[in-house]
Image (cartoon, rainbow, N blue to C red; front, side, top):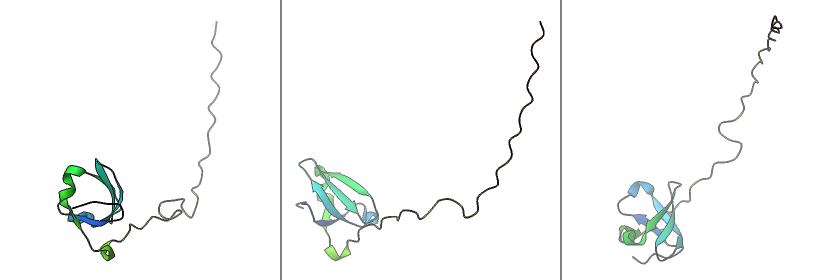
Length: 93
């Protein structure tokens, strides 16, 4: 297969990746953004594992929105008071 920028492809040996859109191509490798959210670089000797896919089957990965997910809790934790250590006595001479 001739791999060029903008092509929609699928990888024959890794169907779980979904379809991918070719982002960049040079003489050594192609950079492909797959539907599973990963960007993978496929070396030119493995281009024969890539097959054309229906452009309608490519769904770009959904980006996580900022501010969603793990963050601060709704109620702040109570702070424990610090206890001062007693000063040690001066050494006897």
